[in-house]
Length: 400
Image (tube, rainbow, N blue to C red; front, side, top):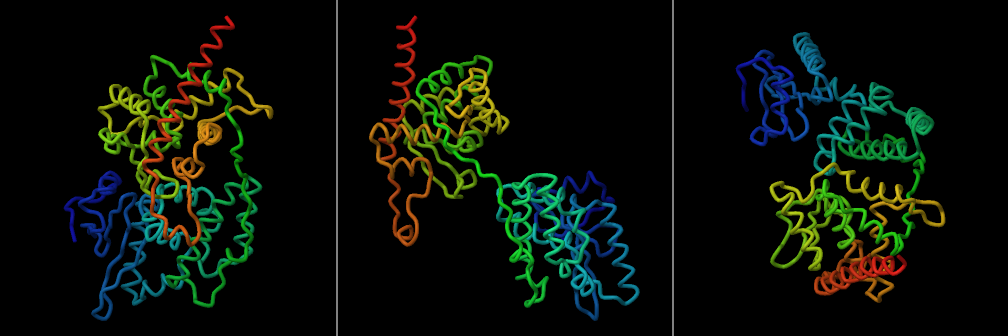
């Protein structure tokens, strides 16, 4: 347990967040007896500790910055007064926990450890739930309040937002019910409430060879060489944008010509080894000359690559028969479709796309990762891309 000699300020508290040497340690407030702060990667848990009948106990006040410093100090004052008046704040808190308190506990106990972007979950809660039903006692929230909340979000926002809020709150109720915040026989309203249906994106926009050729040429930009090279890597590797944009140089195996996709970047949260062609390795080598001093391969704004590709599609009026432009993710559909067209094995294609190739009981016994086959596929695919770009350019020259 640590102590600081100076009074706490917002600046002091912010300096504790994410400090690896202090994570999960309880740091006492020097001027408020019984008040402690426990740092984590994204927040500080405010805890009140005291003694009753010779036994130590603690009560969680809340999480900073989701709860302001003023609110934390006010809660500490109330708890001290209750102790002086002979009231057990621990039992009282258990009996009167509101949704805000229960959700913050759920956030620190589960979300922080199991979500790639935990702060996004808290932001959604703060925006759509905290000031609407967050003040209600957790054990008194009924189907009516939950239904009205979801309906209001659907009316003022969208079905997709409502679906996200529904999923987060359902997970919270299930998790906290199991931890004893509700009586065992209590009803979880989100097990009764029907899940709202969000808008589903249909990935059926197919890029043509002519469109790929235009995209390839228009990607050339001396002012944005990193973006150009990253987009061309997407074409050659069929990676998701995040798998290139946020990957690091440590994950490039230059000797074995492979790219490691860490589990935190993979959609299925599985670490993958992706063999690369000579063309892809050349693009990485060029990218290293421009961005090699950075930790990440690209590391630009996460939307920069997608915006670049969509901008080219729109500015050159590249529409399909339904009037739709193409986007970065459609490059994966282009790969999947044309790799089949040139006779490559569908199982290897799916594996190279980092899709699940085995399901059910067979998935428990299938450990072969197709590395040799995927390396051959990568080479054939890059040769195909080169032939499309070269042939299309030759055709245009003949017409001229």
